Length: 225
Image (cartoon, rainbow, N blue to C red; front, side, top):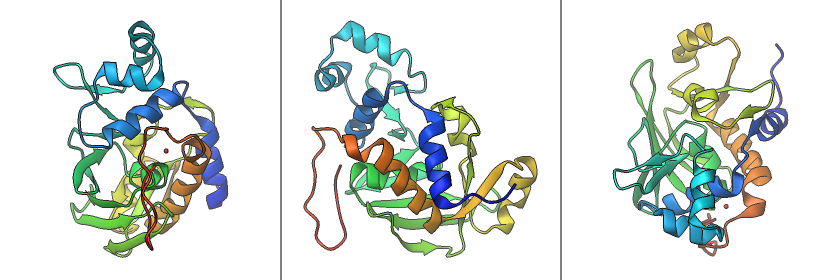
């Protein structure tokens, strides 16, 4: 299969990963990114819906993570440790997948310090991702990211996409993964950040949460979806 352009990849991801509860998920993303559990009452208030409607809608977003007290602690960005560490303004968070680390900085309007590991070599991969879709200080410099581009519309659930988006320290380190997943593509981290910015612009940025703080830019960037 010929390699798709970055524009085509971004368009396919935006169109094919369907989220029927986009406003709910966007609000969870913004509020959990502040680094604290989100109560159901706070979420209902921010969405201007009653508790019964909230429970009905949460039941349809089955990947949402909760703590023992029933507070929301994750959707995309999570307080639960994963392979992908995602630091915002000193707050230590995590993401479900590699692509989230370049999707959420432009979605949230914040610069993120990212740390992950290659599943093949266990080598650490670190970089800074900005809201402008720029990657800085990437180590190792030849690191890549895997993506599986859906051919048809799918529910935006963790298993259909996130679990197959990983970091690899080199393209060679991804060879076993690609043999098992021939439908996957590899992007440089810089290319993935460009795709992330374009997907964020179509799905998150134009509808940013009114409760999200927005920092004034000083050279590099800051806060929003």
